[in-house]
Image 1 (cartoon, rainbow, N blue to C red):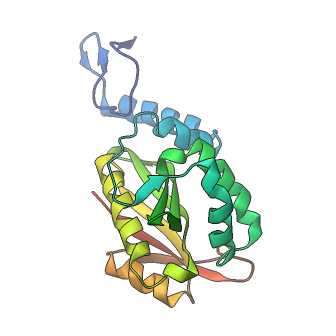
Image 2 (image 1 turned 45 degrees about the vertical axis):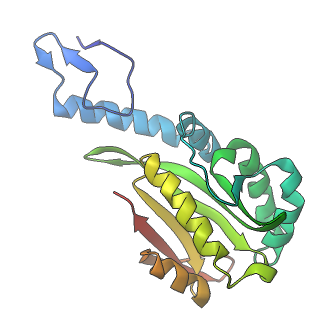
Length: 211
């Protein structure tokens, strides 16, 4: 019988022992699979909220976390580039995933925002945490001034601090300016996907590896 010396955590290489010694790699993997499958049954926001419990924030110049008073302006900026259907997701994220919903300001005005969600991914090395950019947009008046780059750079620093293995994003294949920015920041195209960025539209899945 397995005796657990402490509650299971994300580190599955310690904490479990047999009477005659450490738990075998096969048993560790089985426990890891069970843990991961339990995560997959949860709504995405619930998984993200759980993974954010011990999230560490860093101070960022002119970048703050979202609050309710900012939402009307964020929705306006969002509507310049995206359809209104995804506004509900932004509103949910502002409550459940507030720690990774970043807003960049120019003095007292909102210049743009970037919001993420977190996803666990199972590998032979253990449970990896990846982040996905759910939505990023810069106000038309502030485009071409480096706000998007700064927003990404500062938020990605925080991702590294919190052990995120990589950052993923989806971008429309015709959005050349955005693709160029992501490539400058070392994002790489993983594959082309349909029906994610919009009906009958193609987009790239891009990834920036952090570990």
